[in-house]
Length: 55
Image (cartoon, rainbow, N blue to C red; front, side, top):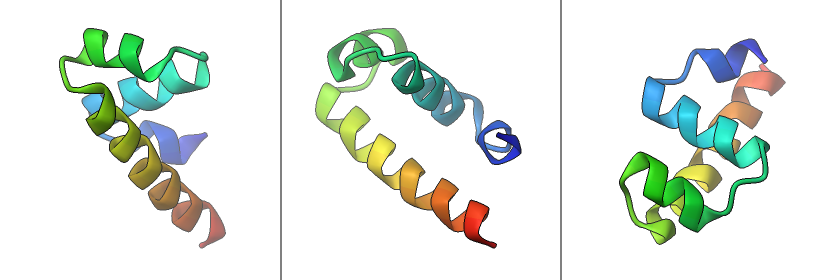
């Protein structure tokens, strides 16, 4: 969980909302980016967090 809190505020918000089962559309409305960009960011953040957890 520590790796999650190392993220910048926007990325942290996106991941926390995702983990709380918000849809991409809901997250996009809250954060102010497109739903497709939310999907891309979530994918990249998952990869980044996985790498941090494996180290």
